[in-house]
Length: 232
Image (cartoon, rainbow, N blue to C red; front, side, top):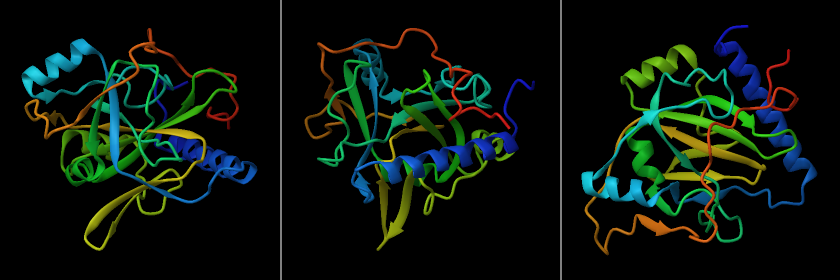
């Protein structure tokens, strides 16, 4: 077995993710309308927040083996993970998560303007029957990351795909998502400049300090999940 998935493997896995999302939508009573996304967001620790504010930059790190151990970007591509899912009642990012104490938000259009090329890299769960996650990689045209993705990952049409859409409407960048039951994350392959702390720059929000459960170690995809494994 090859160490990493081929592009053909990933195209097959992407089709499985599309089928899974379609099944979730058809069988659920969820609102099936696409809803606007204002921000991408990531949770981080108090220590990391202070470092980022001091240096005024959020620096990329190499992708670990969390999720699919055969994902081609594992140990080979630097970036930052951002969540995209929203509370479908409010249209805002989920208020609280069990991961870290602080949340950093970035307007989606800022990220997309700099990194308009998007590729599929991962579809996984952490245990059979658990929630599924899908990862999209955003790159800047002509960058080392973009050249890597062109060789190793299938591109995603952001105007028509099943999971997260970014479209130009009346000279504005509009991002939308539908409640398909998949946690969609962005792996953003550029550092993020951070402006000095100021009341006019509300990029940081406090997560629930009594409900923080940082992930310990790498959680890899189970081999027995028929939904998200390449089992041709």
